[in-house]
Length: 200
Ligand SMILES: C[S@@+](CC[C@H](N)C(=O)[O-])C[C@H]1O[C@@H](n2cnc3c(N)ncnc32)[C@H](O)[C@@H]1O
Image 1: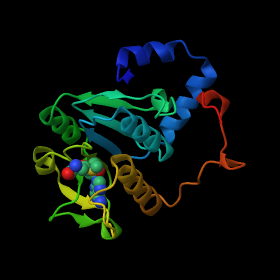
Image 2: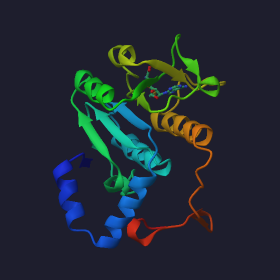
Image 3: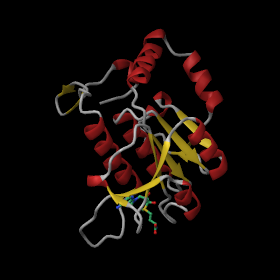
């Protein structure tokens, strides 16, 4: 099981070759001004998968609130390329989000939520998602400037947290940044850069 560890990450990057470091710098330059935050995810695989999603959509950073363990298999080992932060609680999280100029968006089902298809994304959104067991806490929902929900049509009461994150980021990227050209494709996958450490 992996854990967010800034010192280990710094050491890892010191030991990487210049080509790999250049790849990380290139990806960092392309990053979008959005971010995702996750409150106390309990299933490490979900957080691993969510890190993978954030990478696919060039999310600016991933903010962990409370729990910080994740499954590096779920992340496809891409977590080392991601910008991550960890805060122990809502106070520290909100202080950072305000100082960084984010608009905090609670991604949660609820009465005051706007529906995603009609949602006008702000310049610098920070999408906050809740845990699998308890959803987003009332405390964090109250700290949010706005709330958005994904319309559902079937019987299931809610979506998986990474699925929700994927839908929201996809909506943000395609509607707010239509100028972004998708990465090149090779066969049935996006083309691998050898420096990414990914295997097919
Ligand atoms: C599995 S759900 C939480 C279920 C939890 N047992 C509850 O009762 O609230 C995990 C997270 O995914 C997000 N989510 C799931 N479905 C959603 C939807 N339709 N719209 C917006 N967010 C959703 C929310 O952030 C939620 O906290």
